[in-house]
Structures are given as C-alpha cells and as structure tokens.
Amino acid sequence: LATRPEWVGELSQAGALVRNQALGFWWANVPKARWPQDEVSRRHIAMSWHPVYGDRRQEIVFIGSDMDEAAIRRQLDACLVGDANAKDMPIAAWKRLPDPFPAWKRTEEA
Image (cartoon, rainbow, N blue to C red; front, side):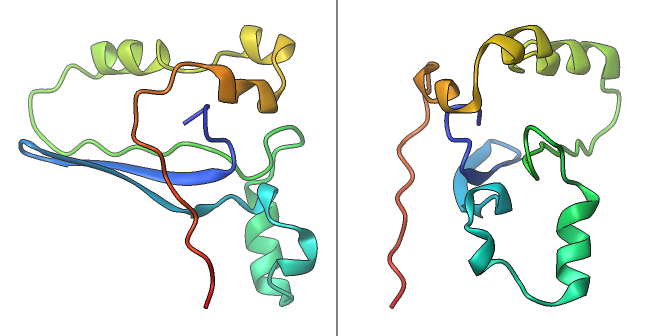
C-alpha cells in the first residue's frame, strides 16, 4: 500500500474470504546495521533494488479460468501511484493518501 511504504503487506482472497495483513518491513526501511550480514542474502536484496523505491514492489497472482487479463490490468493500473504522480510526491507523502484498510501495528520484540 502506498500509504504504508515501510510495510510489506499481503492481500489474499480465496472464494468469498478476503484477508489483508502486515508481513513485516521492506529492507528499505530497516537500518543497514540490522540487514543480514551474509553475502547471499545481501545479493538477494540487491537483485530487486530500485534507486528510489528500494526493494518495495508489488506481486500479484490470479488463479482461475476465463479471466479478462486486459480488463484486470487496466483496473489494477488505475490503483497505482503512477510515475507522473511519484515524481512530484516523495514516498513519505504517500502516507497522506486515502487508506481504507485497518491499522497495522508493530509488535515489539521479546
């Protein structure tokens, strides 16, 4: 969610059941001192690193039949904070966009 740029979130649907939840934080929001120290993990993080967005990205999978891919793409594209907007709006400003989802809370480590 653009309004939660520090969070990795999940939206899943199976039939009528829809769930959204926080899964953790993007590496872009974790101090580098707390990143994994091994080279394999660091390479994995670097593989999907963007100079502006860090490792933030979205991934989506649809499983079904007789779906209109073009219509689905148009509807999903309409939900994005597009490049034209992003150039004028820093990531921190995305938090001011409308957000209809319940708050996610950080759990403190034991």
